[in-house]
Amino acid sequence: MSAEIHPSAVIAPGARLAEGVKVGPYAIIGEHVEIGPGSVIGAHAVIEPRVRMGGNNTVHPHAVLGGLPQDLSFSADTETWLDIGDGNVFREGVTLSRATQPGTSTRIGSGCYLMNNSHVGHDCTVGDYTIFASGATLGGHVHVGDRVFLGGGVMTHQFCRIGSFAMLQGLAGINKDVLPFMMVGGRPGKHYRLNLVGMRRAGIDGERLKAVSAAIRRLRNRQDLDGLPDTPELAYLRDWIGVKSRRGILPFIDVSRDAE
Image 1 (cartoon, rainbow, N blue to C red):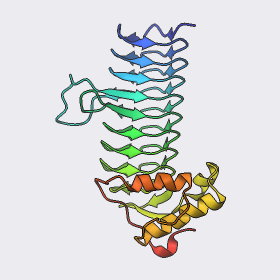
Image 2: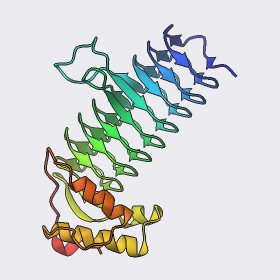
Image 3: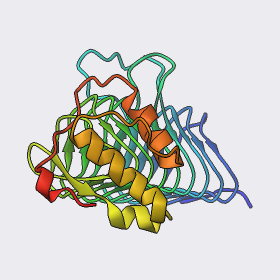
Image 4: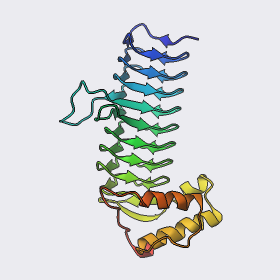
């Protein structure tokens, strides 16, 4: 089955659309765009040049993917990319910028859901199964892990990192790194407890959950993680905190409010 393209859509000659792609009325697809099988591009959506997209993605009306970076030093003829995995949903008004450095990409994983008017800035990396509620925004060079939830209106400063399984409260202001497995709220943001619901939904419970709780308690008290079990979660946490931060790590709101 070939691509199904509405007569009013504008498709650049160099764009490559796989079998089963559907393109709605007045959509625009630019040069050097690749769209994988089963993807749906809604009415008035814009896929700018140099976007590579996997299969079974859904782009709702008026989303703009692959726009020029919002960086005053960027030259429009620089060859940079936006790379997108499989099975993502981009709702109305979502904007994703491509990268700034030649040959590099802004990257979105697979299985993500970006609600209306959310934004991913240039040079960001977003993991798998991450959710952006309405209006959530990433500045440039932000790294987001897997299975993160960003509440409505969350604002994230450039160069921050958000660890996997973190949950960010609506309207939180993120100006430093967010630890994996944590819930964050406030402006500026602060860690306040483990994301227990998210972890249990992902099958992290029992002794594995207790190990994460013990590790976070030690980090809160500025202690190392020596002697704790070598679970997959702690291996990830150790690797994550071993990366030098450009912004520092968010503080804890209060020792007494940290959940076990």
